[in-house]
Length: 61
Length: 243
Image (tube, rainbow over all chains, first blue to last red; front, side):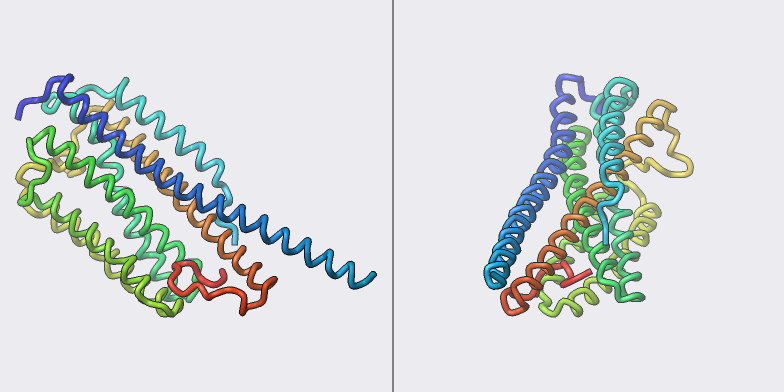
């Protein structure tokens, strides 16, 4: 087949590069949501540790 | 275990290389004499395919390491390498179809060995996760997944060689001993894109490993604080109970 003119080839090239960027962005956003969950769980864990420390101090008093 | 070491430097290098490669693609590399502007897809499609196939092989190598040492961290490395390679393989299939439509007038050509063989490799690895998560016992899961990764990883270079020996109908052979005569600008652009893609793979691999490692450590801490009875075991997760 003869080479496509720029007007016709442009959308295909743009689509291919956008697919690549979309894949990477989707992957990174999924990973970011997992990291947010880890951060939330660390917060819960810190709260749990604080509560335990308070309770043990109260017992000592 | 710290999987995140050097992640910041690697991320910056990946972003710089990918941006540089895209800049070279559109502002430096000349248009192909035969295909014209549409050939620009080559610089994202081929590096992605090469890195995805190398990632599958790396998954097999870590599978061997896991079976030899019994270290669950190697199983995790194998799992993550295959996972990211699968993501890239989806990109290869989609960008390849777009290129095929523009260059040949068809989204897919069933009698072309290169296309069909890549689809077979993709479908083979698409079975990896269902196989893995169908096994409840974490030790058995890791062992079976490693065996799968090794067998499938050995299939990748064999498949590649078989395709190289087959007669190509429409898909060009780019990196052959006789046909790889790209002009210097195209070759440089391609090499930068390939190194950028490899760096991106390494970044995402370390990123996911670091995330999984943090998640495992967190779960282990929770278990210690709440007592073992407080949490359900990680039966169907790829993450080991501890690293």
